[in-house]
Image: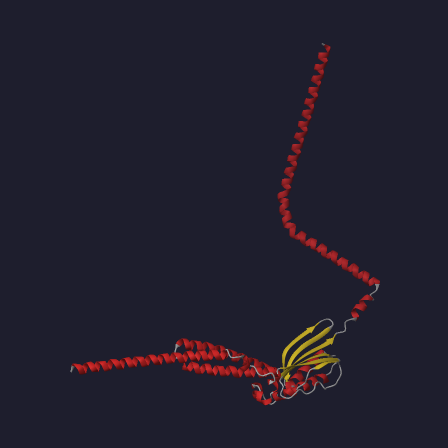
Length: 363
């Protein structure tokens, strides 16, 4: 019976040791799997940038390299590639051929500068605003300025890129004295392709990190994966924001318009130079008289302000001055009396000395 119990206890002990060994092996395997996941993520992050950047000819790869903006943009945006190319500054001519067609499939941001001299500023400003509204655009910035010689306004306008040429032609057909214009274009097709490739790479990296995070079993691994996912998601949002910015600028072109009307005031100086001499003399005399009157008024105001102080000073100062004069007069009389006494004493002393000398001579 004792032998049977010993064998049972030995079997139980062996089973416990086997179970503990299996649990230890599972924990080590999980740790190795987490470590390999982190290593794989780090390797993916440090992969060469060539996987994210497109090839040199990616900008012209056609529909296989189409960016997200082309997929989401309306039909009007797909016509941006046929917008105007940059044109040189024009004069006051009336030609409407602004630019040639750009290559299809290119993403180009256009900006135009138009300067117009008009005869009636108010009506021209109203007309330009109406044309902006009819073109489907909107006013982005407005500033107005007026001097003695000119009244002007600057408008920064966004118009649909599909109607960019038509809007410039409408501006040229508006009533004006002279007009100057210039058109610039910026091709961002290559940047679109680059942003699209980088966005896809970052999204793939985000998916890998999320998969590794789902398999992680330790808190430190979860924290590390969460930090990396947050960094990747921030980069994804930055790429999307840049793409949205480019899409908006491709879809809506910028037109900066400056209107101005010259004000004729140059004849005033000539009329002033022809003023008669007598009128000039009278004007000079009147001006000097006005200056003198202003000075006298200022002196009277100063005296009126100082009068209370002068009264108090007189009440205190006059008695003090009188007392000072009396004391000075008494002092002078005493000094004069003392001087006379000294003179008398010196005269008496001189007489006595003379008498003594005479007496000594007689002896």
